[in-house]
Amino acid sequence: MKINFFTLITFLSTVLGAQAQQTYDVANIPAELIKNATIVVRNEEQILAVKSERNATYSYKTAITILSQNAESSAVLSEYYDKFSSVYNIKATMYDAKGVKIKSYKTSDCKDESITDNGTMYDDNRMKKLVFLNSSYPFTVEYSYQKDYNGYLGFPSWYPVSTYDCAVEKSSYTIELPKELTFKYLKSKDLKTDSSLVNNKLIYQWACKNILPIEYEPMTTGMTSVTPWVISSPDKFEYDNVKGNVANWKNLGSWTHQLSNDPQILPADVKAEVKKLTATAKTEQEKISILYNYLQSHTRYVGIQLGIGGFKPIAADKVAAVNYGDCKALSNYMKTLLAEAGIASHLVILGSGKPSINPAYASFGQTNHMILCVPSKKDTTWLECTSQYDPVGFVGNDNANRTVLMITPEGGKLIRTPVYKPEDNFQNTSAKVALSADGKANITIRTNYGAAQYEDHLFMTLLEPADQRKRLLNNLGIPNMEISAVSFLQPDKKIPEMQGTISLTSNQILSEGADKLFLILNLLNRTESVPRKVDNRKMPFAQTYGFKDSDEITYTIPPGYKIEFIPKDIVLESEFGKYTAKAVVKDNTIVYTRMKLINSKQYPPEKYNLMVDFYKKIYLADKQKAVLAKIN
Image (tube, rainbow, N blue to C red):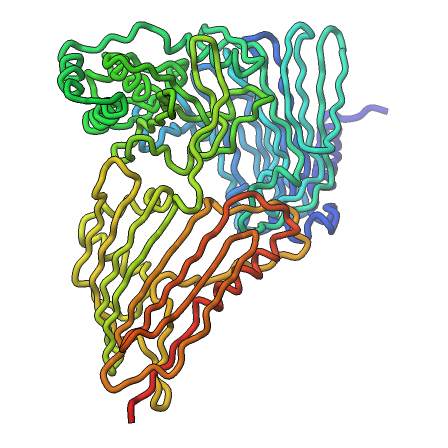
C-alpha cells in the first residue's frame, strides 16, 4: 500500500503534537508539586562538555510551567556571554495549559543587551534575552541553547530550584571532560554523584526529581541547606591567553599576584606629594591615614571589567592620570602610594556580601572584590579603597568577619577580616521631650551611630537638607511632626561613627481617656512588627548583623498633672540577645531607658519560633505606657 507523502507529514505532525500536548499538559503534573508552587520545572538538562583547558561547550534545555502571574518573571530566557563566549542555536516554544503549542521562537527573536550597570564604565558582558508574554495562566515555555567558551575561569553551577515556590519534576547536570584534565566540585548533602570513564572521557552526573516547592521563610540564610546543588571548578584553565592553576588557594593567589606584579610607577608630581604629605608624620599608622585620605579625595570608583582586566589591576600611573578605577585598580594604587612611603601592604580578594571563602575549595566564583591590608607587628590595617567616605581601617559589614585571601609573592594566604561585635554596631540615642497638657511636645533628639549602623546611616550626611527632612518624615514614626532643625555629621573622619541631631514638634504624643493622659514611653525606637512563626521550618536563619541600641528619653510632665503610674522594669534575655527597659520618676520628669542587644549568628531552623517569641516580648515591652493624672 502506498502512503501519500503529505498524508505522512500530517500523520507525523499529529503524533508529535499529541506527544507535546501529553508532555506539557498541566493536568499531568503531580498534585503535590503544584501545591504551594508558582512555577514547575518540567524538565531541565544541563551538559558541560570540556574539550581542553581553554575550550568547552555548554548545552542547556528546560521546560517551565508558569502557574500564575506571580511567577511571570520566570518566563524569561536569559544567558550571559562576553568576548570569550558565544550563545547560539536558541530555540523556544510556548504551550498553553493543555500542552498545545502557541508559538515558536528562534535566535533572531531574542534581544541582545548590554548588562553594564550604572557604576561600570567598561565591561564586555552581554545577554541574550527572550521574554515570553502570555495573558492566560498556566502556560509552559520550553527553550534550549548552546554556549561555546574560548577561555574560562570556572564551570557553570547547578541550582535546579531557582527560587522560592518552585517545584521540579526532573533536572540533571552532566560534566564530561578528557581524563587527563582534573576538576573539583562541591555538592549538597546526600546528593548522589555518578561517575564513569567512557572513551577516555570522564563523565560526572547529578540528578533530582519530584522536588517539592520551598516556601519563603523569614530571615533565611538561603535555600542551599534544603535543595540540591552542585558547584564546580577546573584545576587548570586558560583565559584571555593567560594560563592558571587553581587547584588550591595558594595557587590562585600566585596567579593573581602574577597579574598585579608588574612594576608600578608613580608620576613625579604624585611622588612629590606623597613625600610632602608624610614628611611630618610620626608613625606608620599616621602615614597610612594621610595617604588613605589622599586616595579618597583624589579618586573615585568606576567599574572596569574587560577580559583579564576583570582580574588584573590597571597600572598605578594610569590611575593617577585619570583619578578613577575599579576595586583592583584603586587597591593597587593605594598599595603603590604606601610603597612610596616605605610601607608594605598586600592585596586581598574576598566575596563582598557573600559567605566566607571555603578554605578547602579554591575557585574564582567565591570572590568578587578586592581590598588592601597593611600588616604590622601589633595589628593589621584594612583599607576599603573604593569608598570616598569610610574611615581608615573600616571595611564595612559586607566585608567583615570573613575568611579572605591575601595575595603575597609566595601565593595566597587565608586570613580573617575584622569582626564587628554588637557593641561596635551601636545606636545611642538621647532625647528630651517637653510635654504640654494639650498633647503637644517639643522634642530634641541626639543619636550616635557606630560601625554597621554608621554605614547604614552615612547616606544622611550626603543628602540635601530637604531630602533629609523627607526621609525623617517618612521613617521617624512620630505622628504629626514638624521638623525645625536637622544635622547629620561625622565629627572625626578617622572613626566609623556619626551623629544626628533633630529638633521637632508634635501634637500627638499623648492620648487622652477620661481625665488621664497616656504616654507610650518608647517614642523613637519601637519594634513595630514581629516575624511570623513558621511551623516545621526547614532553613537556618540569622540576623544581617548583631547590634546594640541604647535609648534614654527624658519626659517633662505638663503643668497640672502628676505621674500616676509607670510600668515595672523589664529584663528579657536569651541566646538571641538581651533587652532591658526602665522608667524612673525624677521630680516632674520620667526618665525612660531602654537597651536592645541582638546577637548575630546562624541558628538551626528548630530555634526559629523561640526567636519569634523573644521578639514578641520585645514588641509588647516597647508599647509600655505611663499614666498621667490631673492634680486636684
